[in-house]
Length: 445
Image (cartoon, rainbow, N blue to C red; front, side, top):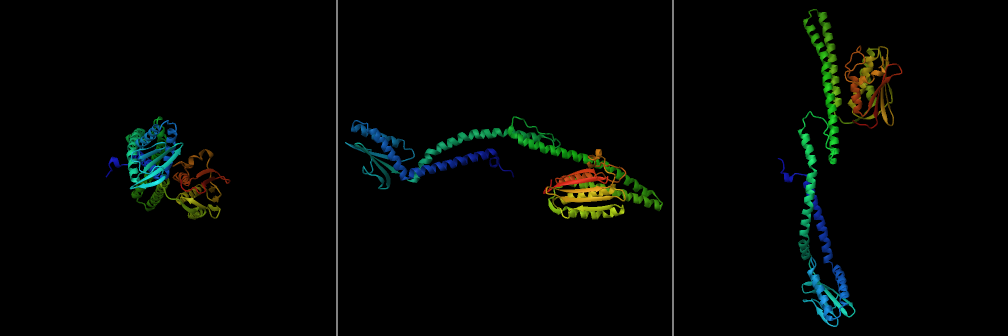
């Protein structure tokens, strides 16, 4: 069940909640600072002393006692009218005559924190010339101060929050319009449309997203094109062995002579083996293109020796000397199946093209930066103009040698899986020299 829109996680909602939290933190910090200052007697003493000094400076210029008392009492009344979140202030002036604000709570001339009944006062007395001024400031409880702070700050805080939230909400909502428009464009595209999105240049914020999407679409487009070409080539290549199987099967069924039927059956079996080998290589190539197996640690030199032992009967049958050379141990981190495919196909390819009495050598060497696997033979070699083509699918350098034309394509794909590359050149003995370069610590592509 989908949650209501108000409870969904949206950018506008997050901005609003973040702004509200920020205002709350500022409000609590400001309120705590005011509470600390307003409830501390030393802060009240300092404030009252400054006010008393300022009043005495004004009173000193008064010509009469009445004028002095009027100035003092008027100043205290103004303090009470503008007290805001603080507390009641009382004043008393003594000199040639005395005067005090109504309700003067303590004895004039007293300093310090005084308790009068249930109320607490901070009294300050300052003298200048012939005048002595006393101020008594009532100390309020923290609960009263908290209430007054809320009454004073809350309306301004709410008004400020609304004033700031509205333009931020509008800016975020408007800023998300290009993203929603891009989403609509993507949703309206057909599954077969892999062309670039090409977002409008006026929206710079969308450029990284559209660039990443265009790069992904380009990769998908190339992958789809490769798969289409692969399917077409595979269908074309499978047509020939399937037709041969059909012909040989009809021949076996139609012949009466046992020797002729046996010959036709052997030919049918050979065609079936060729078709089976082609299908196996097609599946291997498809696996290399799609499989995402994990990286493992293995010994490449040991793997070469194992694969050489597997093809040794074929080498003996064809009177070909097969040699494994190089380092005894070559640890490697990567896809073991890809390394096996490289070794198996290179050795099989070399044995297939090397004439009887020839020589095939596999060498594994490791350096600080890379591992190299070299397979050389004494066959006819590959002309320079064909060395790039032999790695293409279904390309065969010679029609005289049986094969599917997929072995070297598998080698190239497997080398890419190991973050490596494969090259071909002329061997010193005149045949072909294949070299696979695998970076150290490459892992999987």
